[in-house]
Image (cartoon, rainbow, N blue to C red; front, side):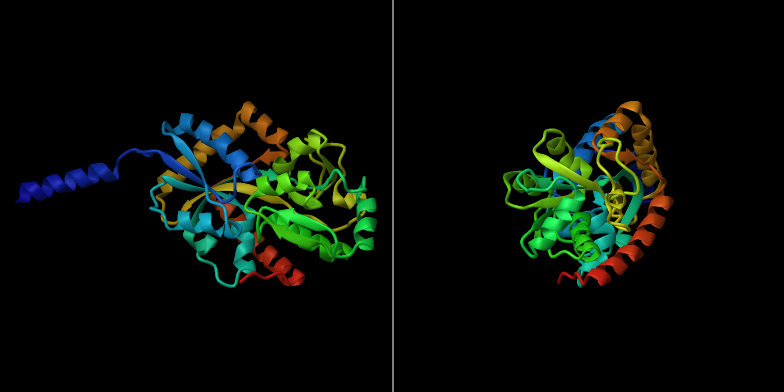
Amino acid sequence: MALAVGAATLVGAARAEAPYPSKPIRLVVPFAPGGSSDILARLLADRLKSELGQVVVVENKPGAGGNIAGESVARAAPDGHTLLLAAAGPTVINPSLYSKMPFDPARDLAPITVLAREHNLMAVKAQLPVRNLSEFLAYARSHPGKLSFGSPGNGTVAHLGGELLNRTAGLKMQHVPYKGSGPAVADLMAGHIDLMIDNMPALLAQVQGGKLRPIAVASDKRAAALPDVPTFDEAGVKGYLVTAWKGLMAPAGTPKPVIAKLHEACARILATPEMRKRVIELGAEPVGNSPEAFAAQIRSETAWWAAQVKATGTRLD
């Protein structure tokens, strides 16, 4: 009997010490294919396979402003085999925006690293008769309630960015939520909505192809990918700053050595000239900070966005 117990203990210890990862990894994306989250997730998945020696499968779970994907990862086994391509909206905005959250991002998810800081770009449909921010503001003010802005979903940075522009510039634009940037951009090109203020990776190809017209960048500096497009501050709307990011998170309780291994792998990937070039071409900047720095950023931004949600009066039940 003692031998049996001892053997079982040894087997259990061997399993507990099994090298990570021991099976394919699921990388859950909160939005539909085609948006900035999806683009970055697929770039990362290809390279993590080489770093970790396991297939990384991208799984799109859109809906509820990213809450569906976030909850699914928060409830997954904390073993590092289910990860979240986290975005600012579901992580730091939704806790203030929704009266009843299905999970607590700060409590139920473990930060690994910020993968990229993204410029937010305002782009309008080609049919809109404006060429710059001054012309747009004049047009919007002369057509109150007639213009619509799209977003990847309620609670996203693109959603709150539009509401903040309404408040900052005294506009009355209508919000149209989608289940990801991909479908929203498709409707923008088709002329069904008038504009978006979204992460640059989701809009860049269409802007460069002449299908959408860039107006301004909602950052503190111009984007390397579109150096001729001014910031909102340069174009005359002072104090309008809406930044975004994409990060990697795991279920809370994931062992620290697993978190550390994932962070180190991401940091190596983001430091390669090839990946840096690709991320910058998409209109973003590679980051790769520590789990501790990411956690501090989440705390700070959650408080900042809570103030913005209160100021705009935007709430979702």
